[in-house]
Image (cartoon, rainbow, N blue to C red; front, top):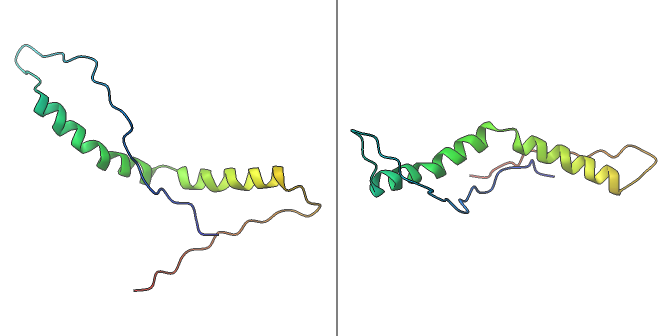
Length: 85
């Protein structure tokens, strides 16, 4: 099997509950929009730093062991894909 990988990080919903302006620094809708535009890049960065793919592979191994009860140990092999140029 190929190794697990993060395929997408889509924003589902964002709720802005309140704008709290400072005495000198006002928050505009454009400020909020510019901060929201950074979220997808930040999400990809966090996903890359996380151990999510390794956890997914481990969970798959555990679920297969639970569902396929064999007398011999079940071995799941992950291989790297060779990309052709």
